[in-house]
Length: 256
Ligand code: PGA
Image 1 (cartoon, rainbow, N blue to C red):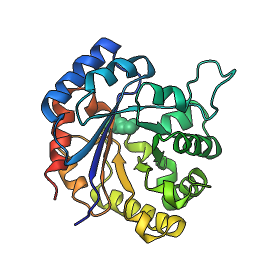
Image 2: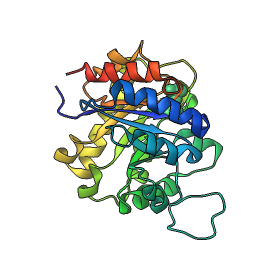
Image 3: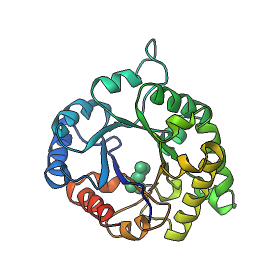
């Protein structure tokens, strides 16, 4: 059994007004705010971060953003910096989500700059990688994931690597209802763990949490979360309702 603490993060994407977000956080905190078996993070859109942060204050639930710029400040209209996120008590930030990569043109190089900037500012990256359907069908999955990991984590020190949470999200499984089979997911997770061993050594690699993302929900989570190298989930759709999100936290807590 793994000594890594399970990790469940809710990626709300472009959903929820600040008021709706507070209502959701209140329900989550009431149900699982005191448990400490699983690390729980909610990631509202920028407009809802501060109010959600206040609502979860005093609980064990943590606050994450969905993106940030790698520069500290300046003429970057529409962007926010790591220090700005820290100032409202965010502890985590999702970086390199496939929607950022495909819809907003983020390259591995940009994602890498963001990872380094987040770490420099004591923000923990939830670093996302994953192959498209075409890449999987052409047998390129492991190669794609390897490139994303090597480029995205370039220059990260061994000391800071344990702060990173990796999220493997096959693009074809995101928001589609098509979940990867446990075998497909575990194969890639084990491969990623091997890449982390090469980059940072075994001791560090054994500490890094690797999440699965892509249509994870209470019905399929227990089997996925029971796999040796699947340390939690990055949850989109099922994080928008307290009941399903709480069930996912409970499912993760049940795995010993
Ligand atoms: P999904 O999204 O759970 O709705 O598939 C996951 C994600 O994109 O992080």
